[in-house]
Image (cartoon, rainbow, N blue to C red; front, top):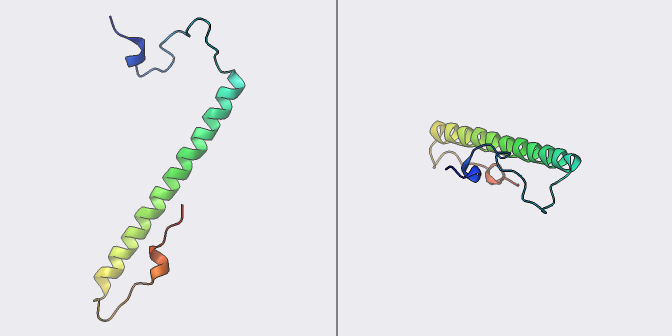
Length: 78
């Protein structure tokens, strides 16, 4: 017999008797916060990938002797 906690469906397990379940409003708020966090992570990841591509391009365009990368472009603030 499969354990419902092994299911990918988070609603597969029935609530435990006597345990408090979050209200639908609280669940909606948590879902919204999770969505915002996921979007922020996606934006940071995209930005970091773009910066890496830019730095690779710059590295390939000049030699160390003739070109120096600005240090401020290497700092990413989270």
